[in-house]
Image (cartoon, rainbow, N blue to C red; front, side, top):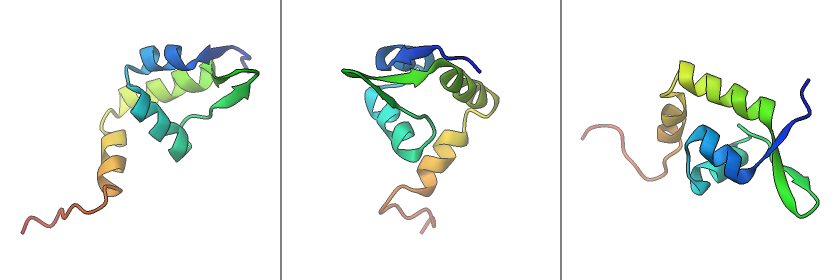
Length: 77
């Protein structure tokens, strides 16, 4: 198992997401943030694994967000 870690900024670049999306991924448990002295670090291996999963099924994250969007009626009334 790799012990390489990356910064928040590097994760944003690798996944091509914004800060709010990263916060949501952390909150949902999709990516673990590990406290490290004065900052937060992320396992490079985990980030790359998540990215590969998104490339295989790019709509998976959007489907999950749609399921949990509060106040929206998807019934097509």
